[in-house]
Amino acid sequence: MQIQLSAVVPVPLRERILQRQSDIWNRDVTFQPGQFIKIKAPSGTGKTTLVHYLYHIRYDYTGTVSVNGKPWQSYDRDQLSAIRQQQVSVVFQDLRLFDQLTALENIELKRVMHPQPYYPQEKALEFAERLGVTHVLKQSGATLSYGERQRIAIIRALMQPFEWLMMDEPFSHLDDANADKAAKLIAEECTARKAGFILTDLDHDQRFDYTVSYLL
Amino acid sequence: MQFNQILKKIIHTGVGRGRFWMASIGLGIAMLLILVALQVHTNFNELLYGRRNQNERADYLVVNKKITNDMMGRPELTVFRPEELKDIAAQPFVEDFSVITAAQYNVRLEADQLGFSTLAFFESVPDNFIDVQTTDWKWQEGEQIVPIIVPRDFTNMFNFGFALGNNMPQFSEETIKTLSPGIVISQGMRTGRFMGRIVGFSDRISTVLVPQTFMDWANNIYGTGSAKAPSRVIIKTKDPSSTVLTTYLEEHKYITDEEKTKYSKIRGIVQIIVSAVGFFGLVLLMFALLVFSMFIQLVIESYRNEIRLLITLGASPGQLQRYLLKQFIPMYIVTGIIAFAAVTGLQWWASGQLAARNMFVSQWPGIMALVATVAILALVYTVNWLAVRKHIAEHT
Image (tube, rainbow over all chains, first blue to last red; front, side):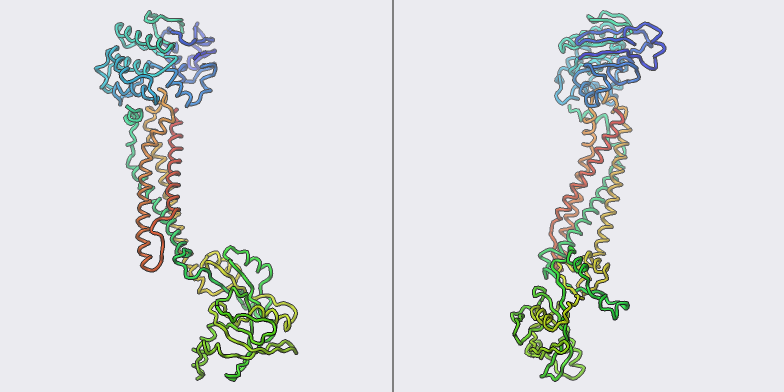
């Protein structure tokens, strides 16, 4: 699955963006399948906005974001949900867990969303063990710390098949040790699926063997 | 864990449950009213047309135009024009139809045994319209004896009115049948003499009948030459109480034996009541559907953030629609079953009550009631499905 950006400019940030240099905005960029992509971006340059455009939950831009040669807008709602269940997964910066569910239920929600789950439940427990959140699995999403929520959100994203994983500052609430564990898990899971990822962050890092880095 | 089980923890359909219950009760009452209306209609039809309730398979009505003051002295206004006859024959309630042929000659009856003679008249109808079963009802050219059928009313009038009042003996029908009055038919100078023989008494046609063969022959020989237009017709109908029939007669200012059509009034009233009940049921059904739609909108609105997040995470609108419908549909099906069961109970009870009065209707609700139950449930499902789809689409 190939993702192409063609002269994409967010309407609200238009003035600011056109005044400065960017590797992404207002350019033609192609993300090839399987690439590990890092997008480094200072605050306020539209990092989260870009992830939302790539995941197609925000549409206030000029230019086109194309998936497999077709602009996002040409996919209907059912096609979009199929893509989100099978081909593209996401870790939002604001994590977006359901407070009314326990941590485990939040993970399960994504795992059983497709009638034929990609992984059995044991895999979820195994990932929770690896990221050190087993003890919070029974807790309500509302009572978790940011760091715990972030790890639950990562595990949730890994419960489905995907060709691309979008991550918006996925380690912002984790200490280095935990961030490294999470990165290792993500890299393994991407490799196992022959999938690529697009990761946005404020700073430079060495956690992954990035194929390409962009400055937003 | 199933997806729907997790959804149940996210989207509680308990919000506004009271309203949902009210709407369900409304739906139940609406269904009951509609089913009762349909069932009463079915029962009424069965009472009217059902084989078990049929005394006579068909009824005969003699129809003529109402003679008004304007028509007096203008006999051409009281006869049926050919297009009018055609129109009557074409009506759906007419199974068979014939004109009553009037004689075009003068008739005098002479009863020597009784010592009186009287002016009379003959009419004739095809044999299959006659209610008197006798082998004597035939006439061929050259025969001297002409069979006659007189209305039973005549003998009754004679026996209980005329004879008693005038100190004359009463006659049994058997005695009358033995009388052989002389018949003189004439037109101008031509005269013919026959022997009459009363072969039967008719309750159906109130006129003096002779066989059609005699009438045709006599009209030919003694007639004026120009055929008289018919002023009375006889129709065979399955259902003399049909409102269509009475309305038709009224519209054309025709009249007939009202005793036979009186049930049409009762039927008209029952139909109006049944229609009113059915209409009320439909209105109630519409309100129930409206409340259901509003309830669905309320549920979806109060969980719009959750629904948006579910869609964002990849849940398909179809999955959410199916989940939401699953929360409501069992209630509708239960409501439908209860309403149908209630109608079944009522029908069973009504059938017992009616049977005691020698009226027979089925112990079970008709197929119409079953079809209506399924149709209403299908309608409710469709409206719900559309509402769910519409409101979910607003958040995707």
